Length: 481
Ligand code: NAD
Figure 1 (cartoon, protein in one colour):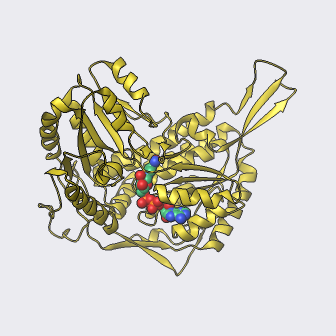
Figure 2: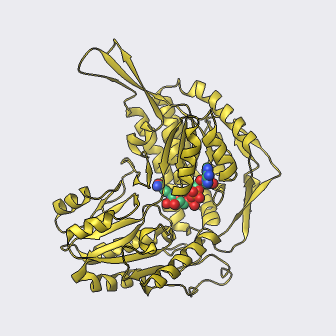
Figure 3: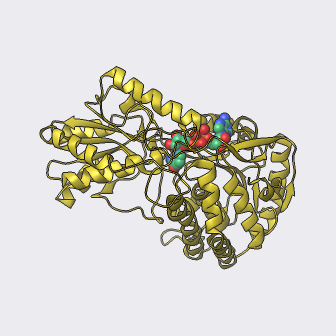
């Protein structure tokens, strides 16, 4: 049990114990592994006040001091990486190696990258033309960070690191599904000597704590990552106080194999993206578009690549997949697979049956089979809607014009991929895609590149200097260079 580590809400550098607590379940066993306090509106008020006080001092520090604090925080998290990995595995089911190598180390890398950016960010710029003018980028104030459960620590650090780097203070409302790592991070913030009130954690429901933060007149920016529906709600709630809103929302991203692509590589990478983290990745490539004349080969390749993925005990080392993070998530995924079959898609891998090979003692977990659906049609809900589970849909296209139409025929625009033997051709195709990121021939994720969406996938960008800009106000000084 993890309760002993998390005595209460973390506000103004102090722990506030509460009797009312939210249980946290282990998705592999369905057992309770801990609990966190259920904060209320009054705790949001306390946390915002503490953050406002801390902001007064922190906003006047230099970038070097802020970078050093972030580096100390990164070092503290890195020193406790095994504890973080165990916690994340227990609360959201990511297998141990994935928790350690991706969930935790990515978060540490983000903090380090943002510390480095703090030192180089253009906080002051002289305009070269016209009458003398200087443009300042100043910290916007108190940031409310509202985060989901799928990469819980990384999603917190992407906001926290950028906000602290520019001089803001933060109140975090972590996901109720995977909130334990947030309190470990608070413990690290204290251990790393971050000033009291700079980072506050108030767990609780979205409807209570999340909405109170979005509506709060003392909050200057809401940075939200989660579902599109909840993001729309946050935006409406925040409108009353005209605060800045950054939204990182859902996706249904397309990978496109152009006719001259290395099909095996394209299919293998797309299956890996669709199944990683049990399909619970906002940028997952969940649709694969292939030339009609190579469609049968692509289906065979997807089955062969997909059948190499096994489910297993998340506490064991290895490259297997874990369960869905919650019973609700598992039920949603199964419902979509059922719907896909009803709509006429063909299950070529996985499907609705209970998976075999689940270790003894884990039968109560929220398991779903990694699934590939062939003969998917653009009008099907399994093709159009975010499933957030390990389900890949394969669609044929006749020519590049149709491939562009299909790739863009989606309410979301978060990520994408293009495969071609000719890089220029892939880039030309990528430029026609209405989406915030495109992997060219499997190009790797760069932590200093902006991440965010077109259309219903969001507003604003996280990471790199673009992520820092989200937390700045811009001021012009006239008469000086
Ligand atoms: P969710 O929307 O249910 O919850 C996200 C957070 O918002 C949680 O902390 C929740 O408590 C809070 N919340 C819920 N309703 C709220 C309300 N009315 N007001 C304020 N806060 C509220 O999402 P989830 O299930 O935790 O995460 C999965 C979703 O997140 C998927 O749609 C996924 O695509 C998306 N996501 C997007 C990105 C991205 O960068 N674009 C990254 C990860 C996840």
